[in-house]
Length: 196
Image 1 (cartoon, rainbow, N blue to C red):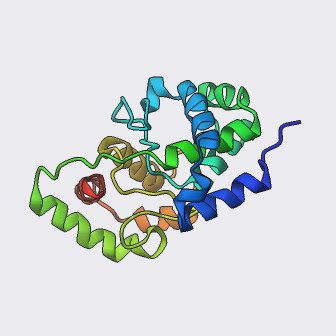
Image 2 (image 1 turned 180 degrees about the vertical axis):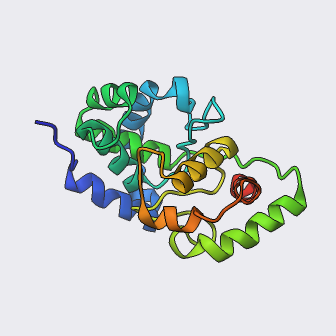
Image 3 (image 1 turned 90 degrees about the vertical axis):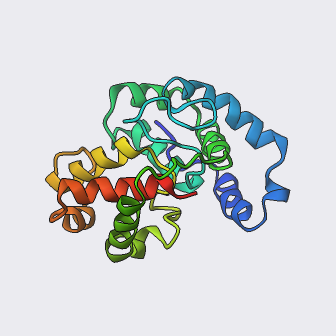
């Protein structure tokens, strides 16, 4: 049977790290997480900056959110044959350390190419997304960080939510994206990708 909860002490360390990184960011969990992240580097990049535009960045993502998603892959609640096999190969503690490692990596926002598009996307974000994802788009323990995310990945994800065709069906996200035009999605993605 797969332990999908992970050690409570590591989950608590996520909260402690957010409050004060110094005592928690000892070499042990971060170094262990860096070793676990080697499984991920071919798609998500060495330090969590994706090598592919349609694959999400993991750098700077909330540790508890990442761990939850990893556990969902391990339990088969999220479907992707490659990811499921990869995550199952990691022990619960290795998953937690890997999530912690990625959460501490530096994000790389994409420069805004079109300031009008970014500004329009920012207004739309403030209207539709800020309540859940936060003013800076940093998310929370159970809501993903969107700031500095891959533009194409954001576009694809929003279109999947809009059409209800993705594997992750979320009624809230579907209701917020239902009336978005492709241009709205492009504007939102450009804005979010440019955030630090």
